[in-house]
Image (cartoon, rainbow, N blue to C red; front, side, top):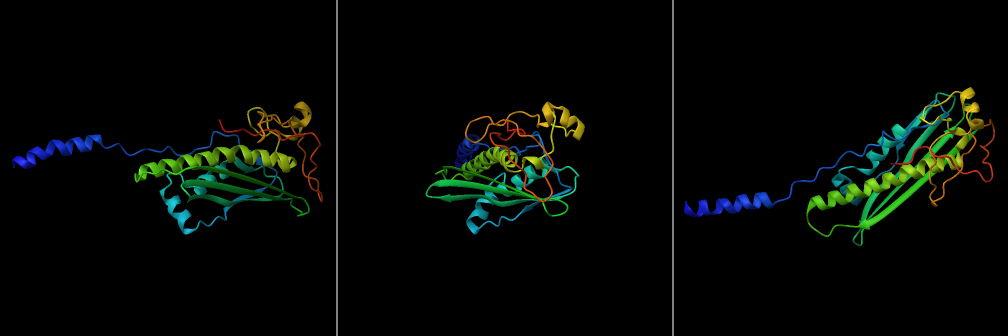
Length: 238
């Protein structure tokens, strides 16, 4: 009995010294301005199939990359209702571990087709990141590192995806006002000569691109990209 009573304070001390399990807030990007594309139907599909090691890491990630990316794409990319079809495809959404590092990558393809099938548009966004993997055996440390990696990839994708869309298929994007609401044809034409009005997005070179005139895709031809005109912004992560 004396030995049991003597051990009780030690047990209580060990319980108090253990750190609480970390909590991870959901990665929510609903505050970002939607990108409205000139199609009636827009499907988001996940073509990424993780390998066994990637699936193991994904199961430990508080914010699995593929499902987090899917949720963001379903919110940010929206159809305008104009004739045409679009498919947004997650090609890669992986985190791997090699040589003491965590390596992450994401690839998203955007394919658009006019109602008659003659006019098409394509854009692809690629991002990657790397960081040192935790060297401790504490599962919480790995969870934290995976969560941070997913967040880094998503922050990059929310810059790179709008940039690639406005760089490659600007005429498929519905013009928006300063508040982000889609404008009608008359209002869009009256606002600064019909260019997209939005917060400037810094391009992946560190330069702020100039606005690109927005026009409906011409039947039977690819959209024309004006020389010297850079992509306009559609809301970079805050």
